[in-house]
Amino acid sequence: MISELELREMPLRQKLRLIKIIWDDLHRESEAYESADWHGMELETTESRRKAGLEEPMDWDKAKKKLTGHEHDSQDTSFSF
Image 1 (cartoon, rainbow, N blue to C red):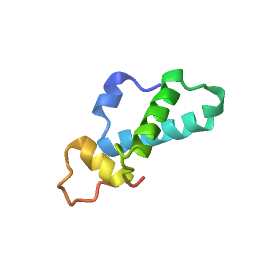
Image 2 (image 1 turned 90 degrees about the horizontal axis):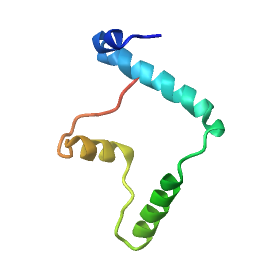
Image 3 (image 1 turned 30 degrees about the vertical axis):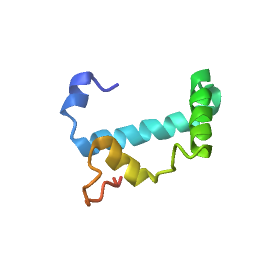
């Protein structure tokens, strides 16, 4: 097991790699877990807003820029592992 101190001292690239490994592992086991009811309700609400023209689909790169406040940046935000 990795200690919190080891994690804090880990280089960013290694942390991102670890996150990917954990995410992939969680995805493999996802059938064993049931999403909370509110997840489905939020998806339904968003879909209703989209159908009403109040939400627009956004590609992931644009969404990342918006979420991080870098909407006007032209840099590539993709990660490679």
